Image (cartoon, rainbow, N blue to C red):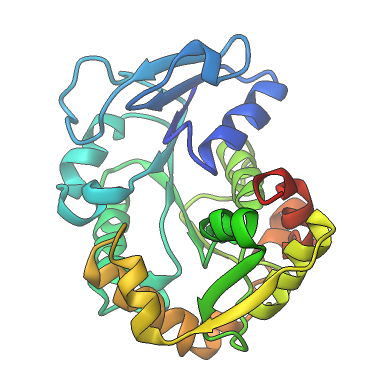
Length: 278
């Protein structure tokens, strides 16, 4: 059995589907989940990782995909969160590239590093996935694209190789089910850096209409971001998208190495998700 936590999110939902298509026995775990959220035959468990002693967490598994997000990432006890899964065959942790590129950042570096250390110290075999920025972060632009065919963002000319969450899910499916990934850490990026201006153009092509780009100052963007994320997360995010390190702008070969195909371009993600912006 393979346990997938965060099973209704951008990565988890696709991962559950991929594993089910392989005929794997899957238990999908999320705080709010029903059988309607998963493919037929997938077992569902509504559980909160903030309560790691909860009786409804799966007691044993061949492998676990561990996604820790939101408030739990910043305030949870990593050892306690990992402990219920310590007896499984392998833990695959979705971490962050920030562990390497922003080690002093509370949100992107130290918080994720604490969970990596907890997994590594659990006595269980492990694999760590460290993605950079997600292509799906562009969903934040959907309301303005739908309402006024505009995108407002800072740092319009700064490129980053954002990664398609479906590629992360495909890599996770591979390392959960195939040998050769024990105690490995993989950085996951898109195939090429793209700027906010270029991503706006890709969305325009996907929906078949012009979309105007409106440049923001860092201060304007920060004020907007504080409505839905803590200040430390907003500040580090702005540092990454405004003044990325060379490693954050570099393209990692790990997706192609594991999947045997190139990482998915942002334009392909935009076409697949065009309905959200139309």
